[in-house]
Length: 275
Ligand SMILES: C[S@@+](CC[C@H](N)C(=O)[O-])C[C@H]1O[C@@H](n2cnc3c(N)ncnc32)[C@H](O)[C@@H]1O
Image (tube, rainbow, N blue to C red):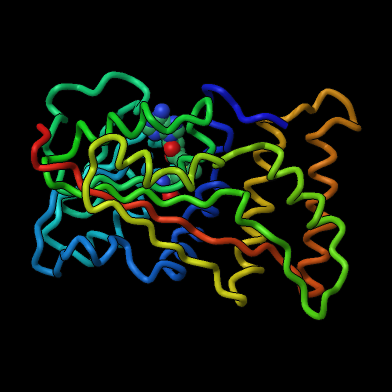
C-alpha cells in the first residue's frame, strides 16, 4: 500500500461528493470555526480568500455565510464535484489551478487568506514544500494561511468496554503503513522555515460521539483508495483485502467502536517584509 505519486487517489462521483460534504460538517463541528479566530475577522470583514483544492466547494459556502462581504475564489484541477458557476453565491468564483504548476502572475500577492484542507492524499514525496511556496506567493504580505489536516499517526481505535476490534485494528495498521500525512505535524516548522510569522498550531480531537460518524466516512474513502491506489490484481491482493476488512470493521463499529484522531490546523502569516 503506497501513496500515489501524481494522480488523485479518490473518486469524484456522487458518493465521494456526499462524503466530502458530510465531512465538512464534522470538520466544522470539531474545530468550531471555519477560519481561526486569530485572524480577527468579523461579520463585516471583506477579505479576499483563496480555497485551494476546493473539492465540492462546500467550505466556501460556510465562509460566505459567515463573512457575506468576502470575495472567495475556489481553486482545483477539477470542478466535477462543484455546483455550476451560475448557482454559486455572489462573490464566490471557481478557477482551475494546479498547485504543482508555476503560479500565474495575476494570482501573486492578492489574497488576505489562503485556506487548504485535506491535501494529504495529494502531497507528493512526503514534501508539502512546493504547495506551500505557491500558496505563499498568492498571499498578500501579512495575509494568513490556514492549513488543516489529520495524519494517521494520531489515530487509534476506541471501543465501548474494551471490546475486541481486530478488523478496525488491522485497518488502522494498513492506513499507518501508507505513510500518508506523516509530514503534517511538521507544518508549523516548515512555515517558520519559509519566513512566516505568528505561526501556531491548533489541535482538535474528535469528540467521542463523532467517532462512529468519522469512521463511516473513513470506510468510504478507504474503499475508494483501495480501488484507485492499491493492488487489485488478485483476489488476495491488498485492495480486496482492505475491502473485506472494511465490511468487518463496519460491523465492529455498529457494536460500539470506532476510530479516534486529532485534526491539526497549522496557521501563520506571510511576513510583511515579503512581496
Ligand atoms: C480530499 S479533497 C478535499 C476537498 C476540500 N478541500 C474539502 O476539504 O472538502 C482534495 C481536493 O484537491 C484537489 N486536487 C488534487 N490535486 C490538486 C492539485 N495539484 N492542485 C489543486 N487541487 C488539487 C482534488 O481535485 C480534490 O478536490
